Length: 304
Ligand code: ZN
Image 1 (cartoon, rainbow, N blue to C red):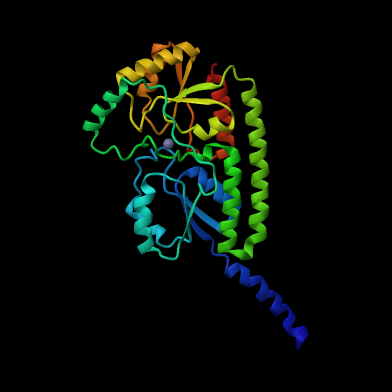
Image 2: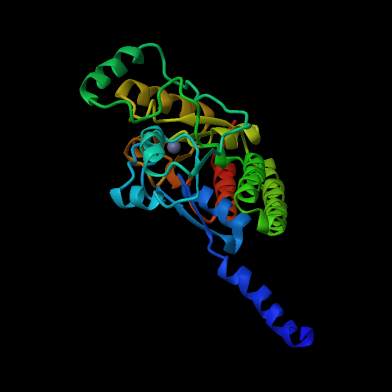
């Protein structure tokens, strides 16, 4: 009898994991986070980023279809984009069992820097705000910088948190999550080394960029980010003039832009200094290759 049943038992044991292999449904805010969760979760997760690579994450609102899909999700990992607060309130009613985690937990957060704007601009900005209507959408001056993912050492921390969250939700695959995490972290360490090598030969440490998405990257690699955008807005003429002076004084020739934002102001600065505009993408899903290319571009653009 026993001998007769043994093959059946084996079949049954093989069949159970296959049947139970429904992947965890995970939502995140920005595409690089989706890459991080996929790297750690492998086949055991199905990940969606609410924000698409080409859209401005600071003014984004989720579509009704996305909100409906979130009702069936197991985990949402937020990161500090403005739309999240309103969404969290709705989600608590829509999906009370979903785990909500914050990618920033445990990370040393920075404030968005006040930058090269002189005091005369105070009035200029007040004036702009009067006409702007909804200035809640941009970065507010005291807000914490949400772009934590632009620093590979911080992504190493985030990967550890993702491993722990997935393991808590799905302890049966703990070994896979641990192995995937270790492989991903090894790649992130190699990326970190490669970026340090790229930047070692840079002619300077200061770079000018439209949207201040690179503050954590700059902090990690001892660079200075000079943003053109101010509180989520295109700067006025006086600020632009002062940025042009700064760029000239530093010998900057390349002004960096991001594909999510209008390059108009950056192009104005570039024209005035007889330089050019180059694009770097903070939201590319191909995180490792993209950050390597960003580092090379910044190394070429940075000046003393
Ligand atoms: Zn941003």
